[in-house]
Length: 151
Image 1 (cartoon, one colour):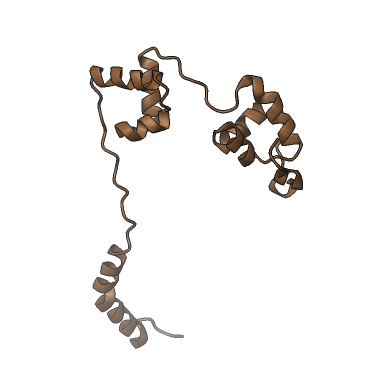
Image 2 (cartoon, rainbow, N blue to C red; image 1 turned 90 degrees about the vertical axis):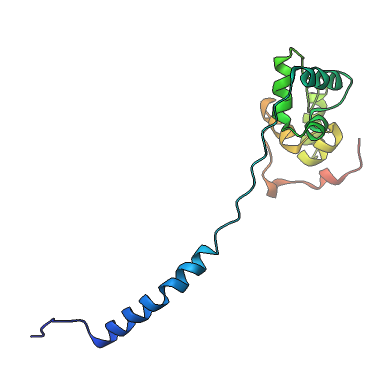
């Protein structure tokens, strides 16, 4: 039978080494924190600024350009315009051209190529095709038809 009256000398040495190295370990860990992304400052527009924003949008400027110019997020610009009673221009594939987009996709065009054609984002194209009931291809189902010359 073995009596356990105290720790072994090896355990004592390891514990002492750990205690001595602890401050250095904590300092190292503290230095590894991820940098904090600075928050975008909130920008409140006056009534006059909102009127100017509306005039610029109605003059033909798009929301992304206005967001950059005014230092706002695109959805904030859209919110200001909606609250001002402005009917937003529809982005993406126009309804009258959705049939064409479906046909081109079925002919092998990629969502990115369609996005370039309709001057919108590929995710916008994906969503429009899904709403139209199109089964989207998996990446491995892509055909070479997407590389044919523009129609």
